[in-house]
Length: 430
Image (cartoon, rainbow, N blue to C red):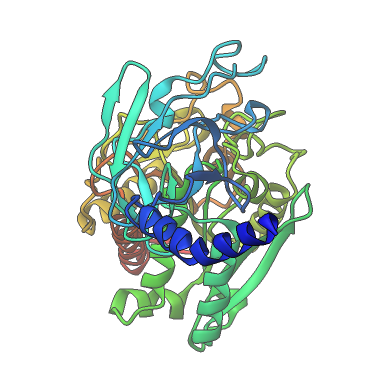
């Protein structure tokens, strides 16, 4: 009888107990989701040091393998955020040593390569923007951002993965009948290196001068892919210079050469056995380099190579765009004068927020022990006499080093190339 009485009493008070518990829980502030850092996507790269959940501070370092190039690149997803709350990202340089046989072997990469003045961030992996200027400390750089979403992507530079580049190529080739997608080669890891061919008008293709534009021989230099995209979009536009160029020349554009390391989030530069821009020899290691060489050799026999531009990003202390060129040992005076005319054309037509420095720099013997295996030097020494071969370095560490700024660099380069070839009335015109 007593046990039965207890059961009745508990059942009677149960609604009151539950109501009181709900009231207590309702007065406790809701805790935000746990902050989680991920890199399980194309191009992702970061080693998580720690996460301060209470203060929304994430600490990382680049996650690249030094055997696959300088570990400067970092790119991660941070989820579990409270929209409208400021997130602090603290980045320190990689602690892993550079492998033997490369400059700086045995020591970690200098910190400046991994610590831009401003980080890049996106809520959709499409639109990339700068953070405010970071705060530099003894151990690294701190960046702050306040997203309106519970998930954000942060990166060393504006991201251009092989997939986003492939999507852009597919889109423009579908929008314009004078743009054709092509596969340059399959990489050593069996990924596709893709590009576009741009040509319009009635002039037979086999008689046109050829322009070859390529980017990202060093995978971490993501800004160069955005310069490539900028020149591509300009070439498809309605300006008289763009129309003349696509109606009178044959243009090839490859936005990422080192697709393998761009896909895995590694640096690429000074990778083992060497990077793409040290591979321009008689026996290239990388199939994509061999594929470009094969095309250039064919056009050289036809006396059709006109302009070769390799797009890169320079060091952290370079704040203006400039050209690297083959040294005096690799070029004769007539070709040097022609190259000077090209430089003058680019200088006169430069219209970008990133300034242009007309002082050329040399990739000669003092630059690197494999200087003859650098793309610009190889093209200069192997292409026909009329060919101008240069490397455009666009700075990544300025307030204007954005997708918009890079696009304007590409447009300026395109206009300079067009004006150079249009005004080329000398006998050496291809």
